[in-house]
Image 1 (cartoon, rainbow, N blue to C red):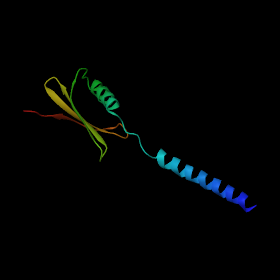
Image 2 (image 1 turned 30 degrees about the horizontal axis):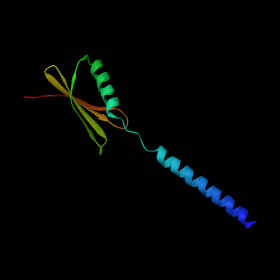
Image 3 (image 1 turned 45 degrees about the vertical axis):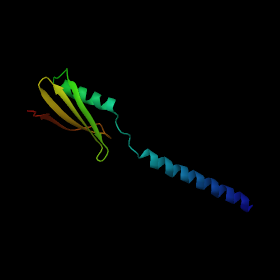
Image 4 (image 1 turned 90 degrees about the vertical axis):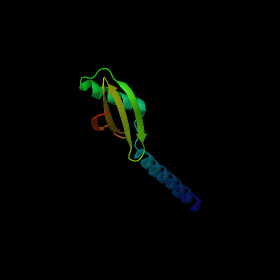
Length: 98
């Protein structure tokens, strides 16, 4: 009879561990890859009326999770920072080059 309760307790312990692990891994956020980042940049530049651009650089930083993209539009360059977790544009600035 005590073996039966041991098996029930052990089974409940395994189920509890699996639930805790599933909650832990569901909280981890997925990061946006470079292809999605370029799609976000393309959409943002189209909203501003820029349909042709040349990618100068793309740099990802892990802490904080930011991707920086520099594009050339004609004679000017635009720098855009994107949050890697949410895909939100954090800043967009024209870069002055000499």
